[in-house]
Image (cartoon, one colour):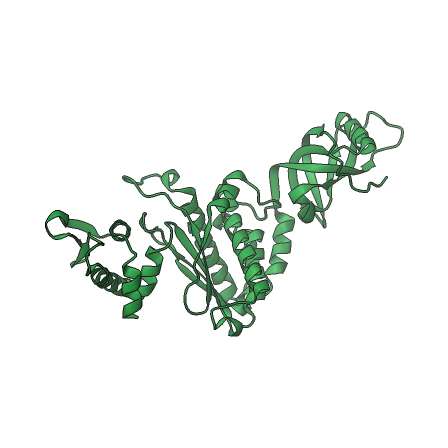
Length: 380
């Protein structure tokens, strides 16, 4: 252990170590860099000497001593702290699978892929709830959420049971942070995610499901529950632990849970809750693009409104399958033409579930789009 810590300590830069210390409440007491090659930091009556010259032979030993003291105060191992400081800057979400087939620190490839896909959807669901809480998001494609996801990096696996780590970049705290809007979007997403996970854990630990249906304002969406359900399929009879290591360049948020552990049985039955939340959710200003496959209005009344069925194209195709839309007379006439020519169309409205089918209400902006040759089979 000592050899491993010193080896890791040799790669930790002085700036990185001091950035972490400052974000955790340590304060610079004296800068003796020029005279002695150290800087003195203090907190809670403790003082540490932070070496400033990596080229010196005793640099790894002295950094290891700092890691040992700080790790003891934080209740974790020096090696875990060293590993964190060697990761890129960001809030790091850890997903630990504790099961019989993960004890070696490995997972079957298929399970590993499922876990990563579920982790991606957890982050996307939390990001969408941060923007605008909903019971269910038919499409996880809001710009800020997708941009955040594209910036996420996967870190090295931790020791022990299989642990995947996902690093969400966070800007440093500069000056006094007095407004929530000054908190980086990524940090707000992670805070909401951990709060939502703690809420799900509390409800399920009491054997309840119903309370989950009304927790969308706390970040609990059907999408988040669906991601947890997908992870349930990976852990077998073990447990799932989700945790966060807060970025070293910004103080940890107060009163936020940093670790939640789900025994396998607490994740059972979540799919039924997802189905109910999917039926309750609605999304305003939802744009559907696809093809007109059915037309329905009173016969011989060319000035009447009518109903159409759209088969979405692109990313909505798998989730929505078919969308029912009520159009005014003018838009319905355009829909007839698009149906005859096989051109794609686009319409905007409020998407919601009506029984087992998707319905777009308050439709507006119906328009025909240039044909692209991607025409499905149509029905009259």
